[in-house]
Length: 271
Image (cartoon, rainbow, N blue to C red; front, side, top):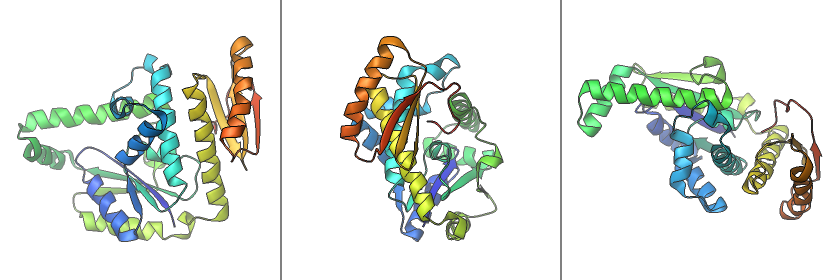
């Protein structure tokens, strides 16, 4: 089986596609559930997590400790759900949050702007000019968010396995394409693919636990449960981090081995 992430613009029928695809495949469907889980687990108001995702970040805000913390919590919640497999996620940047997992089918749903404008006009009873302005603003905010935090353009087709243009194609057509793709051998959950998913979930859990303790300048990798925490911290902070390791080992049984390194730059695979 597979994990499916669906990236979409506002009112491109991506939500409807996700819901129908999940129903057709018998998969779990998640979007807001990830925020609820993160909010509950880390005792953070859900609205703050929503703003961390959707507010357009500035260049300086890229290094905001608050935003980085919230994203760590959200990524952990998504990885925790994806670890159970058979999932359709239709939230922002799922294809980036689950990078490195081979059985993730990354889908992008796009729709003609004029079609989206008409949908928005009907939804909130505003003029076409106002609807167009709102949609373009939302598109740009989403694009800036991904560029700033991940250094990639979300409209880059190379980020996706499947791009579906909803205009001539119907929602049912899109669902059929997704169902067929999800059944391909390359998206099936092999033992190795599940191991990589488990390692990502573990790294996300360790990262979230550390930023919750205000250790912000860290990156984490995991391979076969062997966790490496990369940091540029020194002195007192480094000693405090080292002391925190014992608590991590006790609280996270999946950790086989835990160590700290000062390698710079951080490995590309580190989260």
